[in-house]
Amino acid sequence: MEEYAYITPLLASAFYLAASARLLRLHRQTGERPELLLGVSFALWGIYYLGYNVPSLLRLEPWPHAIEWAFEWLYVLGVFPYMTFTRAVFRPDGAWASALVGICSACLLVGAAMGTLEGQVVYSLGNSWFIVEWVGYTTPCAWLCVEAMVYRHGARKRARLGLVEPLVVNRYLLLALFGGFQVLACLSDLSFAHDISSTQAASLVSNVLLGGTEIASVLVLWLAFFPLPFYANWIAHRAAIPPTSVEA
Image 1 (cartoon, rainbow, N blue to C red):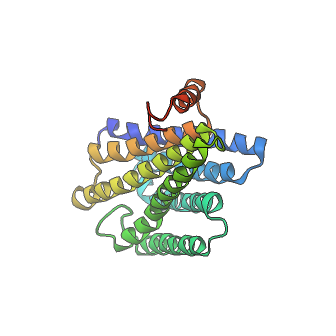
Image 2: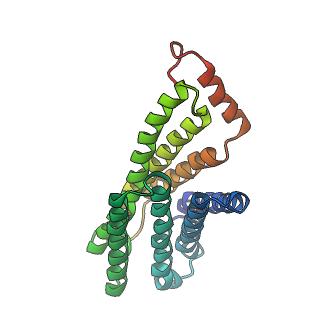
Image 3: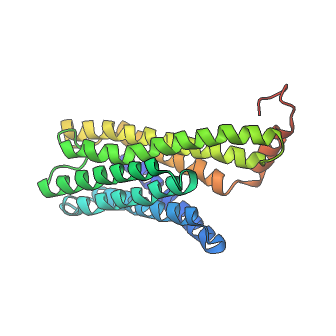
């Protein structure tokens, strides 16, 4: 693969690590659990992207093949605090939410463990355990997207009565977009896996799709937790316009 194919995955790594540092710093200030969970998740995913791409970029063969499973486990481990974040924020007392976390955890652990034991290529449609693992990390992304949209619907109603700040309503939208972009990134994994299955190398298109959707997801989440002043002012201005002029 040409060197430029690694640009978007490495950018995704940089964005994940930068967002992780900000979230963990915010956690130290607030002591809140959600920031800690996402900060840990992003740190693991940022290191995963570095470890999975830098060795191949530097042509340090056969090192990439020897350690790719270790870095794959970093990604798997990062999904656990991600799922816990969704449950803690949206469904802290839901028995079905705990069951869903358990099912996804089983898919992740079984898929990754069996793939490791059998020594199959991680991202390959020929690896039956890859699909099991894929379900384990794609479902939490879709779950977050749905939960955030449901909560946004309720928050919009309360915002019309002045009970919720417009920025809070927008934060739910950004969380939904984050989950949606993550789902797209997971779907891009299938394109990535198809390339590996057929040519033993990922195409530039697959890398751009995967890295680009990951970068987009981190950017919208950054706005959710660290809104820039001009963005916050724009949201407040939109909310001040009468509903007959613009939808809230």
